[in-house]
Image (cartoon, rainbow, N blue to C red; front, side, top):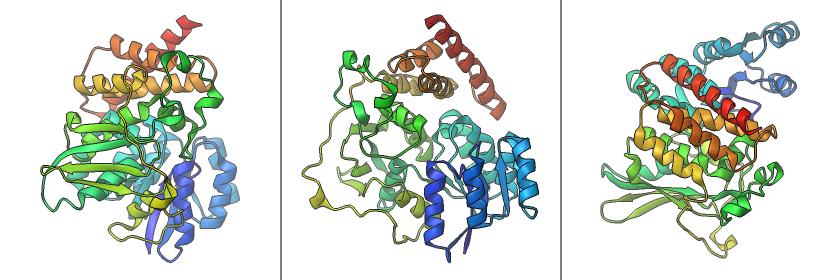
Length: 383
């Protein structure tokens, strides 16, 4: 029996993690859960999984939960989230949080000696050096849950000590693959939220549509696998069957292939190095008429180009990229800007930034504050 903590238990990754726990009640127990404001779903999860502790965003809601579940330890707010990540009895913490809020609880769990199943890419983008140094000090396992990084992790198990030549990071291309710049001008929110292959939350779905998600994943992969970003090649693969691959010195390429179902990499992270029977759909080569691969269009999908520029500049620039994108996507989801203006907001924030080193968590949040302010000013001038 392995105890599991799920940060963001009411989100897409969290719900699918609990699918695995539900399927294997003799293997996993959910001992800690957290959510933002979807407390009705959290209540149902508490009744089903009987965790030891939970965390919610607001103290007022935490008080109601304490009265309703008298034996339950209930935390609240950002500090409570870090307390939950550190003080639970889990051997592994699944980080399915969205955005920068994942940084402090990730570090808290790592420093408490807990293995991490990691889906919160923004934390590594903004604070990769801090997180990976903490992982090295504590000796915990840091297991990727994103399908692409899980694929790379699985493919590297075939390396047998041989150094890799490059990482091949696949991208579906999102719903607007093949669009021209003029066509992107006409994109609506409804269009952007219809991903052709994956079921994800709104923010991640928009990131896929702009291809910013792939830029963030390049930065994430460079930290996870200690690879120069120049040795990470993005390849558009619209069928989402090859989740990513690695190439070795002799030209051999090892790829991980499977159905586009996040429960597969989640289950692998929870049970690593063992593989469990997946509750998801099985992949069959005969179900696909073909598999195609193409280069990404960096001119049309400017977010990916901006990500490469931020990586090259290094230091605080990846954090600016991440924070400004979060702010811009939130504005798009709120109907304040158009789809193509997401990239404009990020470009403005990067151009306005004077680079700095990231030495502490406080440095990251200072960058976040200035980047968000910069984007808000830019948006206000647009309207």
